[in-house]
Length: 205
Image (cartoon, rainbow, N blue to C red; front, top):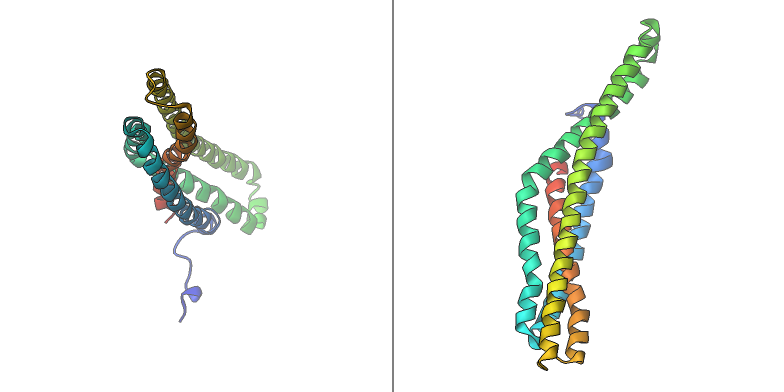
């Protein structure tokens, strides 16, 4: 009468993939949400301090956030599609392992070892391709996010140098601005990573 007595609604391979990979992915997404909340608090306080120092430079500091969020939104569909494909391929591999271990005698009687191994290699090759595509897009987006933030920081440094030359921006202001700018740039970069992770977690969910 309890749910645990019901048969699995999917193959053994999918069940293993769900319990091993998907549960961890969803748990990580919840953990990242807590981290992101703390980063938002830090970034908000830092932004208020930066605004009190120089409002124009602070606005430039948040420009990369617009780029990062836009890129994450554009890549959302592709991220979900690739993650679903890699999860399905993993489920097929683990399912094949389960079937092979459950049918050892039948395989030996039919002398099908070579055919089974060839099939297993094909499944692994497909999984490798899907996993590579999934990881490549995630890594590429993370790299773009990081470089967007770095370019934005470089522009801010150039603008602050101009302000320092005309005396409107002191060395003390500059030191304080750079210190608190780190909290803002970390938040922007991690926001992009979290949006990617969140899209992938929707597949696991």
